[in-house]
Amino acid sequence: MDAGPWRRQYVHDLLFAVDGTGWHEPEMKESIGYRWSGPGRFSVLRMPAPAGAGRGEARVLVLQGEALPEVAVFLNGQRLAVTARRQGLLGILDFAWDEAAMAAEGRAEFWFHAERLAQLPVPGGRMRAVGFRLSTLTLTGAAGGPAPAAEALALILGRRFLFERLAVATGRAHFAFRTDADARVLDVRLEAARLGPTAQPQLVLALQAGAGGVDLALGAPGTVPVVARVAATGSMPLPGALSPRDGLLVARLLAALPEAFGRWLDEAMAGASPDAALLALWRCDLARVARAAEGALAVALADGVDAFAIDPTAPFTWPAAG
Image (cartoon, rainbow, N blue to C red; front, side):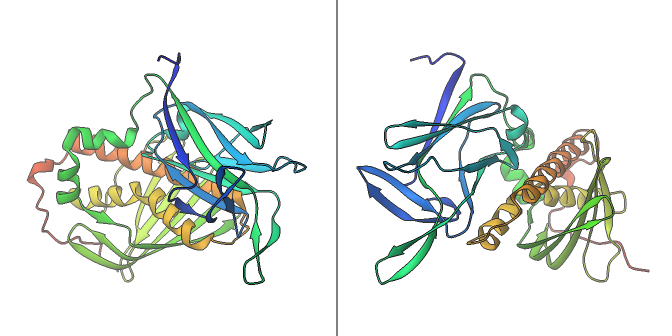
C-alpha cells in the first residue's frame, strides 16, 4: 500500500537488543514492552533509518495519573522539535527532520535527554534512577530521498578496495571539551589506532570550531602535526605535508570520527547528566568534518593519485619533527 510521499518505515521495539547506552533491562506492563531510560539523563539509541528527510514517533508508556515526560530528542547531533500527545497508556512524541540531519550518515543516532529522573526500588532493596519508559521508536522516510553521501566512495571504488588499500582504525577514542576565546575546542586522543598497515599507539587531534569553520591538527608524539581546515562552505583540501596515499588515509580517519564519538558516548555517558547542547554542537561539527573528508577523498581519487597504483603495504610516514 502506497502511503503517499512518506513510505519507507523502520521500527525498533525496545524489548529487543539496543545499540546504544543509557537503558535498563526490558520490562512488560499492561501488555506493553518498554525499557526505562537511565541511570543518567542521557540515553543513546542507534538504528537503521531512511535516507534524506523523514519523520518519526517515540512511544512511551505513561500510566494513569502520570504526566507526559519531558524529553529532548536529538538526531545525529541536531535537536528536533517534539510534539507530545496521549493515546491511552501511551505518550506519543512526534518529530521530523530535514535532509541535513542524515547527510553522510549511515545510521540514525538518537539522543534522548530526560528532564527529570526518579528513584525506584528494585528487588534486593536497592534503588535505581529512571527517566521515562520507551516502548518503540518508528522512523518513516520521504520517498525518493537521496542516498547518504558516505556511500559515494563505496559506490565508486567498492568497500573491499577501501578496506584493503585505505584501511584505517580510530582505536579507542577519548574526547575533552574546552573553550579558547570565542572558539570551541575539542581535544581527542586516539589509542591503538591504525593508518594503513602502520599501528599508531597514540594520536592527538585538536579541533577548533568557530564562525569560519573547523581547524584541525593531527599528529603522533614526536612528529609535526598535520593541519587541515574545513571551511564554512564545507570544503577541505587534503593535508599537503603528506604523501598522496598518506593524505588519503588521514582523510579516511577524519571521516570515521562520528563513529568514534558514538563509541565514546556509550562508555563515557553511562549514568551521566552531560551538557547535551555542547555534545550536540560537536556531533554536528564532527559530521561536517566527516563530510568534508569524504568529499576531499572523492576529488583526490577522481582527479589525483591512481588509487589502483597504491601500495597498501607501504608504511605510513608522518612529517619529521625539527
